[in-house]
Image 1 (cartoon, chains in turn purple, blue):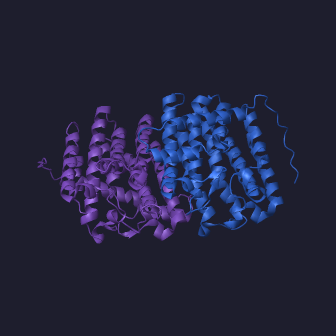
Image 2 (cartoon, helix red, strand yellow):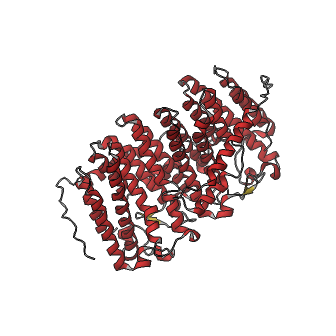
Length: 307
Length: 307
């Protein structure tokens, strides 16, 4: 199958990089000062993983979606950081010895390797929960959004984080009893483990920006396809990548006996599927009558990454 | 030190038992039907611990506090159940092999003994997060409280659940590096691991009921003392209790080398401290000009329990 992507206009100011820089700076600032009531070692463990790098895909998407509807970066940042905290929390728990037992992540030793299992477990719990308190407090203090929008944006992210979202996805991915038919399995896992949180990050930004239900729906679909493409590319990189570049142990999926897009469909078919999901992501966006040029560039960037 | 407690009026209808029954029924109803998007095995694991019994102290306190300000039990129940879900989540994680490694809880095998470590970990994560989505959704649907009250009530519970609350308390309790001076340690742990969630449950109910800041403050103090007394009694029961009655392994604190009120101050002094905290809890309540008769009975019930 050949897909002709629409041409991508290069943005001279590269707002995506700028946005990522803004997010990284906000995270660095946040980590500088420990809130008094958080124990020191717990704070170290939480901020270790929060500042360990990563592409900041979710917070950047959250901000770009909100900005498309006229919200400001400064007002959106508490929600954007919450998306990243939830993601970081899930990575800390996924890496634990009882789960994937991974010792490298984003090119650094995983949280439990540095801080031990009990603290890593509690740092994950803490980030899951602090995400929402941080967003709630910051959004209220910013006084830029209606209370009902704050409640709805928090709800989208809560739903995507919990048992109907990434926690459920992780169960499907790791619990042999819960696995579905082999041909469906990679799709189910990609949607419930990856796409759901990417989609929620976009929706949360759009809701705060004041998106109409129809626009919100289009953004949700965009996020689903984008997130699924992201997961397929992840599966591909696990096979084709090198540790130094991808920052984690390559070939890990095979070692863990995981059912992935590559293990089920092979490399070539997986690549085609990634392209198709990327195309469908762009299709979903095409109904939005706002400036979504930066969001449009995203699927390509993610599809073409090699780490 | 001799403390003369004010006489407790017996309530012929025993609203506390009625309230507990109401909570148990709501939990049973909730667990009957699995939300479609939650994987079956994850749901089994979550509901196993949620229905494993327990005194339902937090949801009952949440409801009694809200009722004191005229809110209805039906309207308060989403918030009340969220308090219990957070508590249950923390127990599942506390019991994990990487933490306290306990195999009995509430007279039943712990979650990971039945479902394995990965699923128990994810069931804990799920309950932590679902608690807030369940409360948010239910409170919005009930349409009985202003949005700002919902945001504030959720905030109190979020704060008490995360790194500044019970997650931090668990770090202080289990991480040797984080332990403070021995004479302060049991107090710090009791406040940050137990009292904070009991106090938050009461505050959340009071906020939804429409408590004034001054009343809310009094309720918070009541919860702090009540929760501290509760923890002291827990430490005492760990030494004096029998497995069959307390439903968990007795003597566990000593085996784990934990610093408790009993290990630091001895049994007699710990008993006196529990009585004093109980007395101070009642003192805090005395400024409230509402019907708090049922809340007044609570400290006595908790102080005199043997399981």
